Image 1 (cartoon, helix red, strand yellow):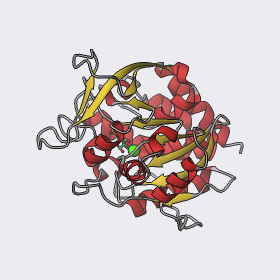
Image 2 (cartoon, rainbow, N blue to C red; image 1 turned 180 degrees about the vertical axis):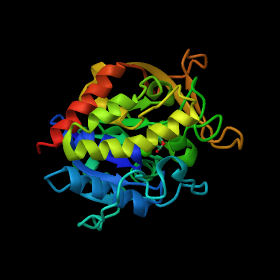
Image 3 (cartoon, rainbow, N blue to C red; image 1 turned 60 degrees about the vertical axis):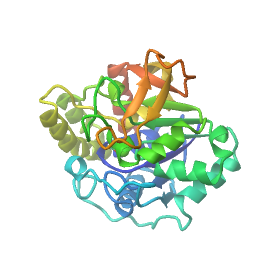
Image 4 (tube, helix red, strand yellow; image 1 turned 120 degrees about the vertical axis):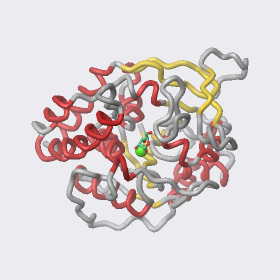
Amino acid sequence: MNVIIDTDPGNDDAIAILLAIASPEIDLLGITAVAGNVPVAITSRNARMICEMASREYIPVYNGEDKPLKNPQVTGEDAHGRSGLEGVEIVEPKFPPESKHAVDWIIESVLSNEGEISICAMGPLTNIARAFEREPRLPEMVRELVIMGGSKFQGGNITPMAEFNFYVDPHAANLVFKSGANITLAPLDVTFQARMEEEWIHRLADAGDIGKFARDILMPSYRFNSERYEGEYAPLHDPFTVAYIIDPSLFKKRPVRVSIETESPLCMGASSIDWWNVTGDKPNCNVLSEVDSNGYFELIYQRVKSLDNK
Ligand code: RIB
Ligand code: CA
């Protein structure tokens, strides 16, 4: 499966990238960095650092949009640290980002491989929205757009009403969900079902140097979430998008109409997920509703472990 990862690493993004690199089911064509958890220069550096550390093959990283379509930039250093990869020493990557802009590369790649490329989008949707805006044929040509974002019953994690990725760029999310693309969405409602356990994180350290890196990346995230959610939740959001591509049988999904709030200050970025189809509107995506949590974490563990022998 040809895959582009659009990302804002970010601790959970980092694990998603490792999972993709480690998985034979995925041909990772490249990574597009977007402003999100930290500014785009840092998300790009982090993506390149992770690729150089974990992959024998060169993986191109393209710098994307440095700010949302309309709203002011909001970042997430509280959760991911100023480096975006709190918990590990930053090793400056050997390779610079590709000279081509991420949006240009996404457009060119999809246009020349119609129906062949899936995109895992795990940051604000600014790059994806810009690509769809610039090339209206693109939404129909992407094989599948698997997005981590949004929330319904779970409530928000950046405001009471909105999830971070959709809050940071609600106009981009709105454009993407109106685009007609073949979307699968992993909202907080499903990512909160998979509770990361400290024992599992420490087990990762058995998986060699990469496993230790993953452990060091995840412990600050575990502590942050355990404190914020009073020990009730410790989600690992972004690998959902990659795990779904690798093994969709780990999930249940449901066709639903999703709309994004772009006007209300109180509800900016909120995702109206019409679970019971009360509007009668045609569904515009499949929402992941359940996850086999043990299967999810075992997949990540086994694949990260396989990287140590690469
Ligand atoms: O709300 C969680 C999402 O926001 C994750 O993708 C995390 O990395 C941040 O980007
Ligand atoms: Ca992310």
